[in-house]
Image (tube, rainbow, N blue to C red):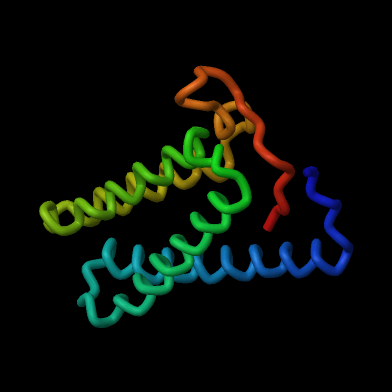
Length: 136
């Protein structure tokens, strides 16, 4: 059964929700990333870290629920790679600045790369377009 088209109210609610979530994520990333890169004590930036991790998780859930193919598209795979890099903070704490920079650079590729790159399926070896998404 095909999904019906979003009403204008639903569209704007989803658009504003996703934009707000992304804005909070960017706030968290800049606060935590700045703290890490500048060597600020963790207690000064940990709340930004929590904001970044929570909003990042919510955005991932949003994408997977919207269309599971996100997980096999390069944008999803690279997001999971970024999570892996962040998990390396534990065993490789001395390399936090380098891990932050690498993660941020991957974020730019995921967010601003051409659609052919972001929608490339690592399983199919070609571009796989998912459902129409609500930008935000």
